[in-house]
Length: 90
Picture (cartoon, helix red, strand yellow):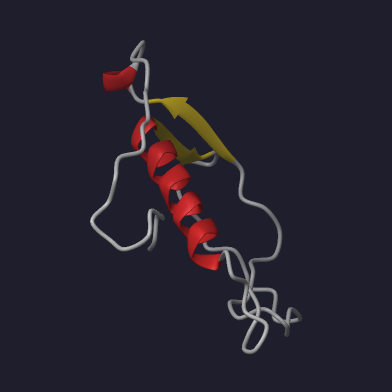
């Protein structure tokens, strides 16, 4: 999202949208590693421009609908907040 003086004006909006989407996915689906257990991937130390070092390689997962939500139709709606601006913020 950049640094001062060129910080992205929409960073809070984008972060809020990402958090909302991830929350909906995590609640509705089970995400499990293909091998049966999570393995921490090695870190890519060559990514010097990243604030958090990204992992090297990929992690294969299976995504399945949670049993308690099979056949449930999910519906999402926006409601007015209590803040000054009508944005999702994290």
